[in-house]
Length: 79
Image 1 (cartoon, rainbow, N blue to C red):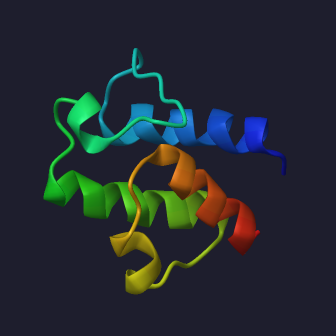
Image 2: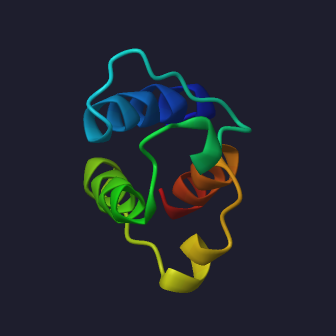
């Protein structure tokens, strides 16, 4: 799976988790860019990403994430 495919699938996950079909994400997207992204939805988001991509992240790996681009990197490494 290439980076474009990862972002396409991530966009679908974000739209589903936040129940907003208008959400678009990019490399630099952060929690402050999405109105409803709080600590609870963050946990839901990560669990959904793990399920959709068939990967499992360590707490250490996800604690240091600064933006969606870094999440995409983490997914690519895990695939």
